[in-house]
Amino acid sequence: MLKINKRFLIALLTFTLPLGCVGCSDGGSATYEQIDGAKAKALMDSERGYIIIDARTQEEYDQGHIPGAILIPEYEIADRAEKELPDKDQLILVYCRSGRRSKIAAEELVNLGYTNVKEFGGIIDWKYEIEK
Image (cartoon, rainbow, N blue to C red; front, side, top):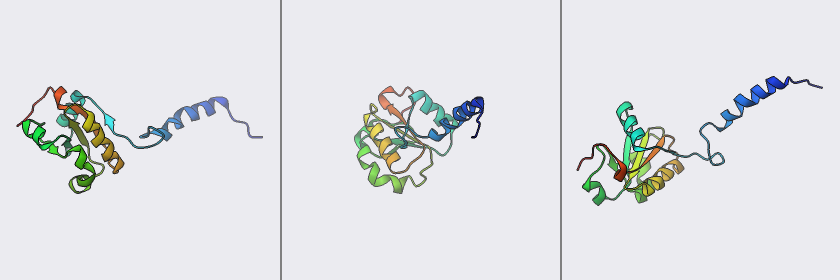
């Protein structure tokens, strides 16, 4: 019979079991990351090549939006994402007015295969620059 050192087995399980879940949640399905506005702003200041999606309506966007944001209303994500967002591994930051529609849009992006989606709530909580 094979004799296994208990300490070795515990160490092995301690370090390998968590690796099986890296990037997973909810039973292994992919998900987006929810962050706050401060974290989103820090990413905007430190990263390059990201996209900001405003998931509101044209009228809301015209009243004021985060600089550089592109308008893709949450109800149009499924139809427009693959054409307008060809790199599925690109950092995508998503917001709306209060956070409800941005969560829907972020979830839809993940369902379409996007791997680096960060949802940061609503512009009503945004403490930084807005352009009109």
